[in-house]
Length: 89
Image (cartoon, rainbow, N blue to C red; front, side, top):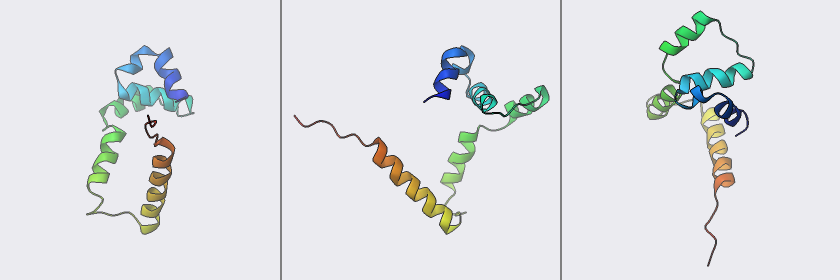
């Protein structure tokens, strides 16, 4: 978890506000916004909402084949890494 866990631990306000969490993590990664830019950011849709909508619309508006293949390969790797079968008894 790394950086996200550090931010959640050290900045309790980020635990209840995804946009504060995003801004804090991105700040530590070098994205420093002005006060005005932060205000605009708070009025924008959350990144998760945008990507969820993209996934819902992917059949109607597909990505390039090479992008779809890359996403498929990433998903395969992710499934392999997170798969933990229950121990046999």
